Length: 136
Image (cartoon, rainbow, N blue to C red; front, side, top):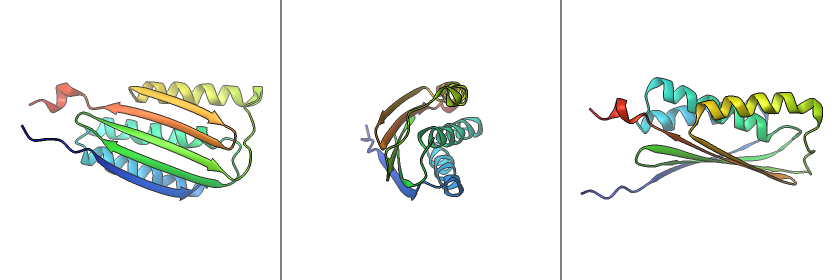
């Protein structure tokens, strides 16, 4: 049996709204290379974008590091936002938007973990391929 060596794709960009399309493009390309079907590619692309927005609430600048690890039947995505200043906590007015974003991401990927620590915010997403489609 051939040993599978995980592949890792990494991207670091300044956190700016106009550059988040790069995160979406890399997510889609990575999922496509991993053999995800069109719907799974779109789900991961949207989930990564929503997480980027969620992590960036209140951030005016900083660095966003993305790491995509291709596994046998899944992609694990780590997103790290390091802001240059302390990020505000979420207030009541933000809560509706945050809840909607969380619901969208939860519906699109198999697991999601978020952590917030001062100017650093982290998300980990795992999206698995639909085994029924890929076992032929």
